[in-house]
Length: 345
Image (cartoon, rainbow, N blue to C red; front, side):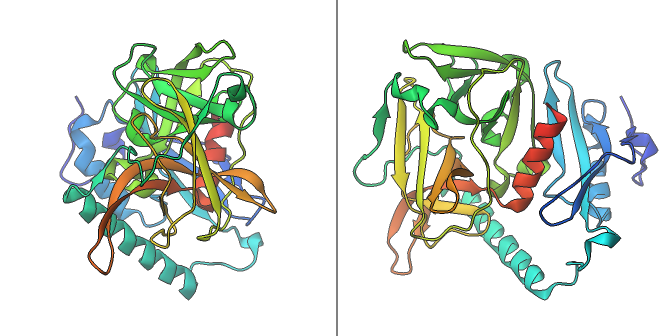
């Protein structure tokens, strides 16, 4: 067991520094994501507090992009990441007043969500029917069509007592909710796709990655990428950080615990924020992790979020109502997930 000293020391934690060329530029905004180092969390279980102190003492790290990877043999690592604008990118955004204001707003919203969790007003399972159940059943034949064919069942196999939903975003990459897999080991997970004959075709998992911020129960970081051992050979859904309004048509397809595939349609509510979508979509047990698609004239159907939780919303008049909440994929999250797709190809 590695013992931690009084002061955080990089050497005592056995950090493995990444190669200097391990950086991925974004063609969209010319910012660069650079992986700095990887820490083995298995070897440093007694140093969790020290690690957090170090993370808080390094302002150049991007806590939104730091991520954990869990491998099939149970190994768990934490990769530290920074995002920066290189000298050739032109205008730097660090001192942008508008951006800082948006960041303060985001932090305020997240604090409110965490307070709601502590008061048990939010359940980490999107399983609320809003008013009349208007979901549409998707049969095995229709399930072979895009985008339904990308819908995946995430569980521990056919007779698993729990289950979530996911969506195929790469050749062998399934995006789901982090709370579905955070406490699981990859070799215990199975991912299934519905076949034309009504049976599920199951695939084993080699690893999964999720935002380090999910360890703090941050609803805005409730997403994880599962890497399969083989490709199902199905079309993947495109991700995009498109702007949403209360008139945007949202939909998701998900499995319930009886392995029935259903689709729900709705629109985002004004309560939504930069990081979280509050919706009137109907959901039931097993739907968490479903990919929320947005339909727009310019973009077609694209993945914009992951179904996460049920939330109690109190209106100004005091009316209490439960809604289903989705983690919104902003530009930074989409960039991070695409980085994972490249790294775990």
